[in-house]
Length: 135
Ligand SMILES: [Fe+2]
Ligand SMILES: [Fe+2]
Image (cartoon, rainbow, N blue to C red):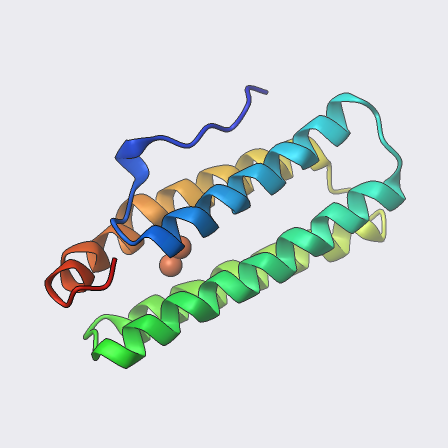
């Protein structure tokens, strides 16, 4: 599993959101390192909780910005955030309670899910915010 890197192509042109996306990637990298170093369930669980809390906060921040600027795609975007968070919570719960979920494929799927969301849905709001001076 390679290190999850952040690059300019993933920018959404809103500094605070780019920073938050970077922190999400950093937290997933910490999880990856915990996996490589064979860290215990407790540490992995703590990192997962941190990822979940940060994801919740990040989704809320994006939705607030969309709401404040009257972005037409808000409800569709909110529904997708809701679906993603429910998925992460379900996987984390199954992992934490040892219900046959492996961290490695779960991390890969999380990483792809986040990147896909940023490159499709998040990048859709970039021009809208730019036109309104949110940067
Ligand atoms: Fe989003
Ligand atoms: Fe985002």
